[in-house]
Length: 456
Image (cartoon, rainbow, N blue to C red; front, side, top):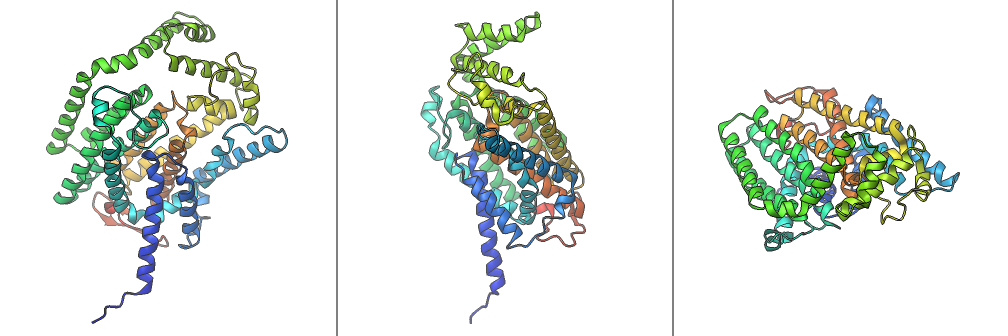
């Protein structure tokens, strides 16, 4: 006997597989540094607006969506004006126009909501395999520097592993919060524990002090989320055990940590002490740059930051647009190797000034508040919001010492950050589910609406 499967079902299943692969391609940037996320994002938006025929106009009635699109067009106009009229091409200026696509990415994530659970399972299984293959365990344990996974350098790899570490933790925590089956919790927890262990080893091996620093507030939020959202004895015991294990590991490698971080720490303390004593910032930075006690990597960053401050002073309110690169040639330390600021905030200030930084800060804070509201109303779990917030804080600290917002990691993170915000906004307006009681609410006119319980 032959069983006939409707063609629409096979077409829908194939489409879902393709969509899931595209989301995985975006997430893969944490492990494999490439530009594939750009093409994946474009295809996701095209599929959503054409194959799934989801109207975008309803999302553009949202003030935050309007603000993102307006900012994106402003950045694009300023880039084109500088390029065509002033003959200044700058460097990576067009990246700031990505905000145009934020609402469309939100619609794409909303229509993919039912796929989140298998996507996360596939991603962390893949992360487990990649980290097992790429982790040079003996070299790391010997205290040598390594470049995690498949990234261009150790800092990028460490930042990516930080995202994987945080994500794996909250993925496991989410299973306990929503009451997944014992089997699901056991499988997810086992995968997450190994992934977390390998990610931490790689972060230690990368010797990226900026990532080490960024993980401190991230760990604080992870502990707080465990205490506030899940007070179950099993989870608390596991969390305390993990924290003790991490603390013990740090103690065991304290000499190696001091070897790589002590000089930077001492120089930083000296700079802070001079500033507190009333010495001008220019003088303090100059003294640190010429001091033989300042580590080479910190010395380069100080030169870059001094030059950036010099450029910012020309147009502190609106920035210098594409012209910043020409102004750079007049700065005191213009011969420094890079024009990548190694500070994400300075990257924004030299281009758009404090007004631009304020607009972007408003968008970020509003997005976090949106996702918080979504968790409060049961659209997503509290663990999912805690993960969103922890990612934001972690990334915000990493860009204090590296221009991650100009890297593939940062660009992709911005798209996923926005997609989560606007997908949550759509579901907030429709009232997708009451997570606490698992009661589906009104979802009229919204395709692929699913309960929050299947988010993974």
